[in-house]
Image (cartoon, rainbow, N blue to C red; front, side):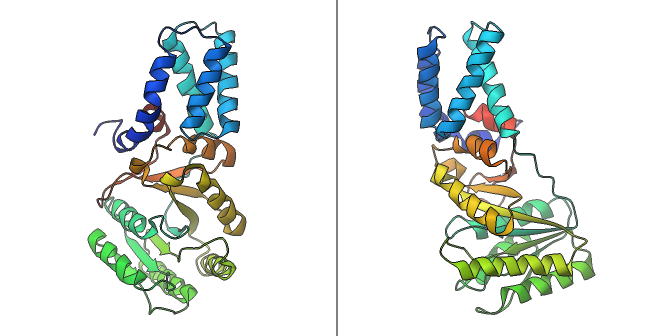
Length: 298
């Protein structure tokens, strides 16, 4: 789809929400205090937090004054650069093999689908992938994951419903070490903030990985439903406090007009978006590209 592809397209609803307002703002308007106030309101309306929106506009105001920018094109270019720099506050995550990737998140965000897509994408690079079906809490979770594993043509290790998730992780790691598997992806049960026992289970699984496979690169990714916008920030903070989060996978970006929240999420929490789900098909997942994302906002 070219340089600006699936992420750009997935931001259509967000772009449609703010593009008309931006067009009106940049149509023959003087670049004065009222201009900056209106721009701040537009950024907030795209679900960029109030704090980050204010910081972006303050920086833009300073650049316009310092560089004596008077043309709309120059203002837009400066705004895009500031948005990109805000995203860059979250240092990009480069996943190195052998990798163990534990995927966490609350119920209903699309973890199972995400794991299937991620497995297929990683396997397409001629890398070996094993999925550990460690969500033994939810009925039929391993059956659903098996369907995705088959579609992605990767190995899956699972156990019966109600069994110890850490035992599944142990078995998967034993296999990964023996077969020198490139990527081991661990599914986990959906956690709610009040489920302290499930959070303790996550900590236990983390300890198993660190103890049994210390030579692996261990990553913890949280899956977030982009349609929740700024509300997703609370989820990140909760999981990060419990186990430490290395990166974010966004789902349903194509179904929301709240895509702007990614800017403030990266800028304030400094946790990078690693992958983005862009649709329902097996290959509808893309590595996050900050330049494509910013272009997709306008």
